[in-house]
Length: 238
Image 1: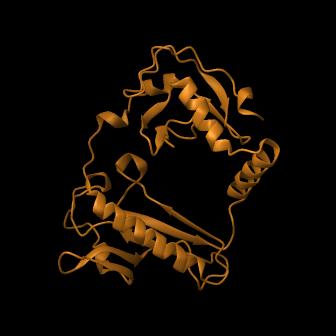
Image 2: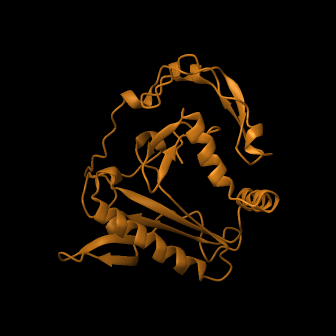
């Protein structure tokens, strides 16, 4: 469907997009910009007893925290300013996917973001984040070169509320022997949009969000960040 068919915005003209004020926002079902994905927007759910933003769960490394850097080493990006390493990739100690299991074939790796303890990803300098992204690139290519690997997923659970269970800042890489059907369907939908409209759907999405001016988080000459119209989880940002 063309973006003009997206339902009109709720009556939330006083919406403050920084402190997530949902006053006046109605509960409704929203459809994704392009795909047949539907979500239920339920602002009243924010009144539940447990509120993540008010909780503090620092990444405190204790004597019982596992030493990720002692696990089997797969890849290391050296520190260019001192001895040691900047980013290290190690084998997952409890993998769900392995190359010796035909019923769950694949690979599972852990990227140790920094040698520093008790330092979250968001506290790292830009230069270190660049090294992490270069490591993602290198491992993604290496895993794609493995036999039968069709898809590589790189993700992180950043913070206690997101499910992070290890103190040391890290991310994970999964290599799968198939393409997730949902991603294949998304690619097909985007291709169809381009064929039918001769333009990039994401240009239309950006234009739509800038016109609405309700969900913009930040913008400069090079990029824009916004909360999508039909988010699939709380605090989702594109």
